[in-house]
Image (spheres, rainbow, N blue to C red):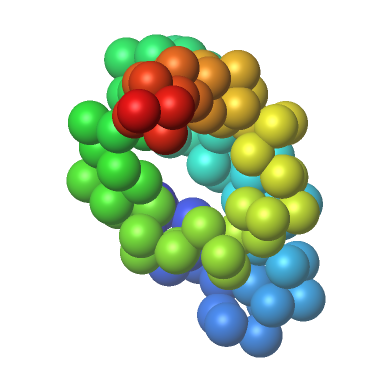
Length: 91
């Protein structure tokens, strides 16, 4: 993550909103999110922190703007969690 971050100052990153720059150019390509396909990471094992995505805090990357759906987070994890949590809620 530091590769490209080192080349831009905060003013530039803010101007680019870390959205056009990071999620398109840096993160989901350079971090090989496609390579790991969200499955090998499972977002639970790494919890967004071990990947040092915490360095960008996913808020700075406008993760909310992606709404967890564009990232297929809902497709993978939320469904998994719901299936596990439903029995507990019902009980």
